[in-house]
Length: 142
Image (tube, rainbow, N blue to C red; front, side, top):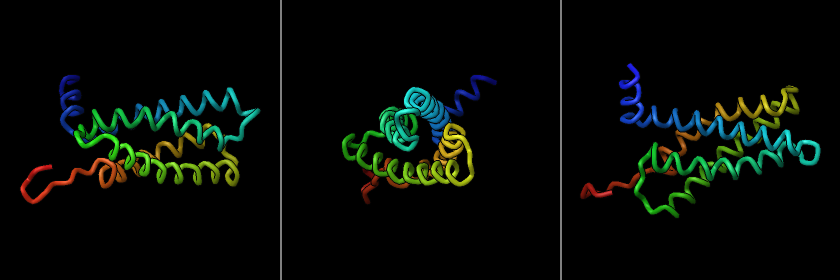
């Protein structure tokens, strides 16, 4: 049973994405929570989210590039597309975080968890269609 689960995880990109997305969510929540509890009296929660974003994205790119999409594309171009995609996703997260905290009265850490979960779906679409999209030429070569 366990070996079948591992085999599915290794062979299926969507499962790999969910595993890496879950890991990145845990890392992102950990980074945001740690920074929030260390600096919330000195920094606004949105400034903490910006700091958390940069640390989390650097971590996430490695997992997505090498484990999920198994990309062999030029790394710099792909990294720039990845950051662009994440800026879009991050904008979505910030608007959601701000809305949940300032309008719904939800605690910033709980709001960040909610927004990170929603962002997993949005980022999969962005990374599949843009960040790690492999160009296949008419001769079949990537």
